[in-house]
Length: 122
Image (tube, rainbow, N blue to C red; front, side, top):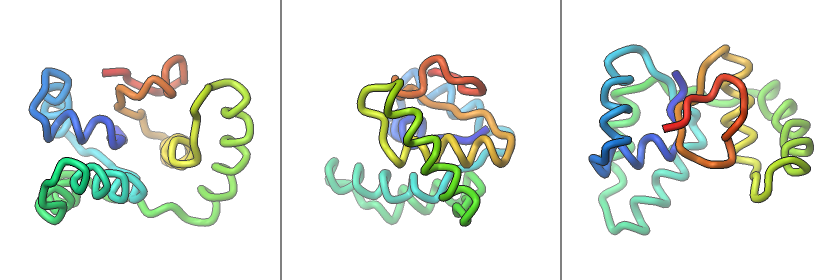
């Protein structure tokens, strides 16, 4: 499973959706490195100590750093998805591409991923 930023935020907030993530974390999970930047931004916005939260993500999941193949495919996916999904962004494309290349299922509640194959909506 590839946990996106939305999933981590719900986990850290301790919400009902976050409980789902807690269960998922009992098995091997992955996080795209770009989610670390989004989580860092979330921590600053919420006035939280980002180091603590980012450390937890790194301890509880395997971080996947995008390579050239991911970046190249993400550009094409981004072009196509922007035509289909309002508000779709490059970060969404990088996460989707990472999941596709690694054969992972994305766990999210982000409405941009609704109706996409291999996505578990929270």
